Length: 172
Image 1 (cartoon, one colour):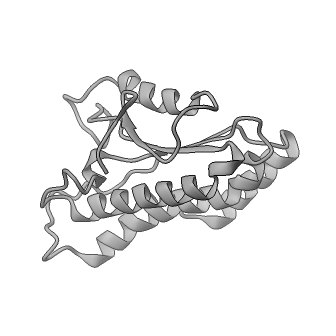
Image 2: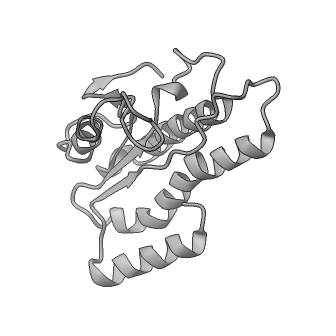
Image 3: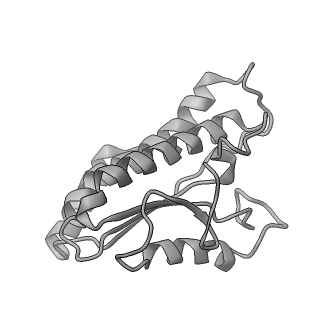
């Protein structure tokens, strides 16, 4: 997600082989920085989180949007986190939370820009999922993935520019 050359190569390969892209799922998430606080965060860590969690999906959208425009029902799903919700944000994970809040803002901007194209752009919080990053005790991966699949397969008359978990809106 941070290597523009590899992103461009994949876009070229997909264009050559398929001519379009129906669904782009941006599932980037690093640095759940529970050891930091906003007042003393290592800004190199914050910059790394922003590069992957925010700018990575932004790069992907820019590279793949020409292919998504060729789809009859293009979908962009940005995998976010409730940690990026301004309504529920607390004092922990400043790099992660800020990067996901910025991803949410980008989701809103892109959805508004693409409103008249039929391309739906939404942010999804899969919840606390039992992955390498989430650790033991979270919900099963299939349960977290269900929200992503829901957003990727929305009908054309469904919402765009929203923030959801399990098909229900979350506060920004």
